[in-house]
Image 1 (cartoon, helix red, strand yellow):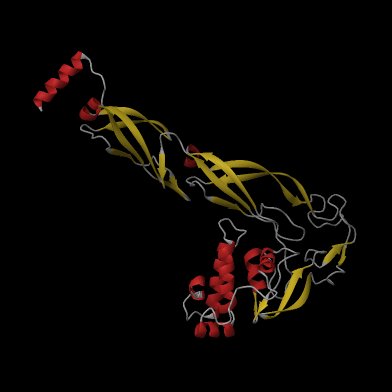
Image 2 (cartoon, helix red, strand yellow):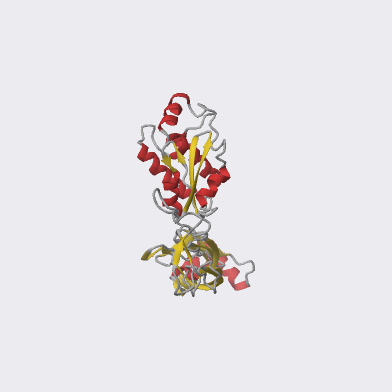
Length: 364
């Protein structure tokens, strides 16, 4: 079955070139394999769709003949998927600029993943880091601050990431001639492709130090332990991820990566959570259910008094308003606690209890 590239990008068949480009940007950012929850297969599919719909000539052929107009297979004839992904991830010295029919995908990568755009130098970006943190259900009631120790690449504290010995100057890079990029042309099934990758010598800066920093040996970064404060907002759910911008790894002459903190919320025995609401049980006697009573109930906020109405039925739920979980990012808004009555029928009765129940039975 032929692929519907319009459906892949989520656009109408009458969408403008700019609309298609915007849709691609959004979906590429969402499904990039290096992002939490990303998918390499989905990322490959949307890039295949953009190669066709982003090229006016190919789009016209697709509209007329469908996806099989030239046995379209995504990336071939010298443009391998691995090459494309290396460019998207900024590997081999930075993001490459792929030019397909006048559309420079390097511009898109620059916006999405930290590389440079057309006419400018590619800027490297440090590696993102993902860590896990665990909190108790009670801790979800309030904002929490956790201090995590991570061993990662940080800017050299002597040269501040420049790679140059303090007090010395920089000179033009001899590898790239000061442009920060190394370009070459390649013939592919899609036509001539211009690639421009970040210079491995100067990391895209166009300059190199006359004298390298002795502390980091010119790398600009050192691997060491870092204490990072992580703010966990009240109301967060199990499995949610917090992005801490700029606290990933450092890279010389580039941007810091990001830190992604995946939160696991430990359940509390006797409680179940559904969104902002909590559910628990209250075990009461037959007499308490029939006559009503006030009992002590444990909640996440501590012990409270719960009124049991007379005539409470087994399985009946009593609502405690505002004793649930806070709503994420909305201070003062909390869910409710629903207490299910579990009426316990005694298995053994003494003589007096039996007599009283028999008299009650006769009165019914």
